[in-house]
Image (cartoon, rainbow, N blue to C red; front, side, top):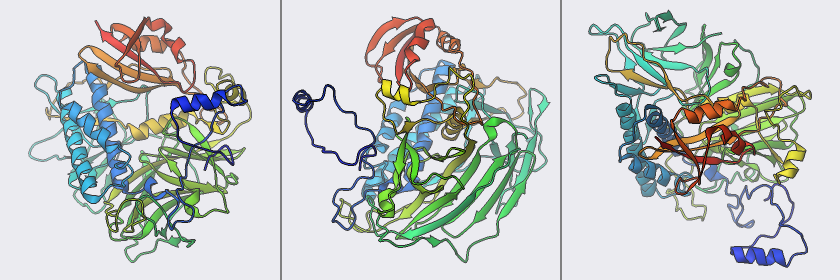
Amino acid sequence: MISSVKYCEVQFGTVADYFKSLKGSAKMRASILGGDFFPYMDNAFSNAPFWTGFYNHRAYFKCFERIIQRELRLVDLLSVTIGNYLNSDMEIARRNLALGIHHDAITGTSKRHVMDDYMLRSRSALHIVLKEQERLLSISNETFTTVFVNNSVKTKGMYLPRITFSFADGIKSYKIQIVNQKTFSTMELVKINVSSPFITVTQNDNLLTIQVVPLLKQSDLFELVYNDGSMETNFGLYFNRINDYGGAYTMVSAGLSFENITDKNRLSPIIIQGPVYSSITQQLSSQLAYSITIINSTDINAHSIQIDLFTNVTLSPGYTYFMNLNSNINSVDHFYTDVNGMYLIQRRYDKKMKLEANIYPMITETVVEDDKLRCTILGAQSTGVTAKLGLITLMVDREIYNDDGKGLDYYEASESHPSHLRYRIIFEPKTSEMNNFSDLKTVNKNELENKSLPMNMMYHSQLVQQTLEELLYPAALFLSSSINSTDNNELIDLPRLPDNIQLITIRYIARKTILLSMRQLPYDCSVKLYCKSNTDMDLTRQFFSSFNGSVYLSNLTGTKKGIQIMPEIIPSYLIQPFHIVTFLVLIN
């Protein structure tokens, strides 16, 4: 299925075949194909034709790969910021992560023993990365230990719980280092486990507002959160499942209806209200629990609803589980999903087709909107999604034993381990009035025509972009070995960039050689909530000047050094929206 055309003819060929065909065509230039080949269907007459099951298959592995990616990005950032070249074993970690993104790994469509090997390599990569983070942060006689802030890591063969700050044996205080790996300031919930509710937190001798909450099912531990202020929103969120007769690759609903999740293990919801955040947590069944959190702050960056899902579907074979968000948005049959995190493309729900024929890959984001309101759901892990009439339906997890004829025998496709899935929901009022935001380029019809981009493409607002980066790259905490130290170390972060310039990657590729890639983002200012920005491109010059080195253009991998450019003209290379530009910085 192609999103932008009803019929097309596709054939395999070489580059020479393409230009030969174009030369013999009456057209003056090549046609532009808009859309993609999702959902893929190999044989309309088979029992399992639609390849939409792999979007969410073995969700635990998709989660784990994202965790390793964020920690690897963090160690690269620390290396550049501190000016310390990485150890050689980091190359092993980077290669093991790359193996995990292979098309039969990240999809979860390999045999059991192969997936076990991928997990072994991924766990090794994470251990190497965490060890390197701690080495980079070692300061004289002071060393630091990684603290997993947003979630512990619990998957096959690995359990890395959040560290508990124990106030026993004469220990009265701890010192932590916070690392923000974004190029903008952010407001985030920072949670740590403590052994006592009688806690104070200070920064530069200033007392901070905190919230202490008993941890569920752990009477001797509490959860501490830092933030401040409030927001209100209303939406419907519910969960269900459907019998799935597909396999690792495919989903087959057989026209059956959804089942509500009811179980004897369903518990009453637990509601928490405090100065920092409010939340509701509930275990719906032995397979699924959820938590909804809202930061109590008037800061615009706090205007998202945090959803945490905890799944364990191992003992529930033959089902695919879904999360549903219901709103009054009149989106009819249209919605958007992202293309590899690059931009959003329009999808359409075809009511003549089965459910599985209407599910599209959601790498990080999905959107529904009408002329008054937009709803965006961001995911910390990839999945599948569909939407109609303002109802967004996301695949959550699945446990499938069947052989769908695509290469995995019966039972080889199963084994989904417990997962912690994280999402953000953002509602943004739409506006037809455009203010003076000339620097924040909205993708409009003329620009799309001039740049030969498909008409069914869009981009999100700056608020969504910053929330997405917060979700994918949360602030990192490191525990100091100097328990009673009172030294005030400054926070580690990168120099700031203009808000419409995205730093994609930055790392050493050789001693005194930094590779970095960035692009300009054309924020959509058709929403009222967050149409403001600092687009001072002089920040880009300052960013590069801070490295005290010579700047050269490069290819994406840094294997080819182009012309040398001065920092003051770098903004001229970042004019075209979405275009990724890569630079080499040779440190003097």
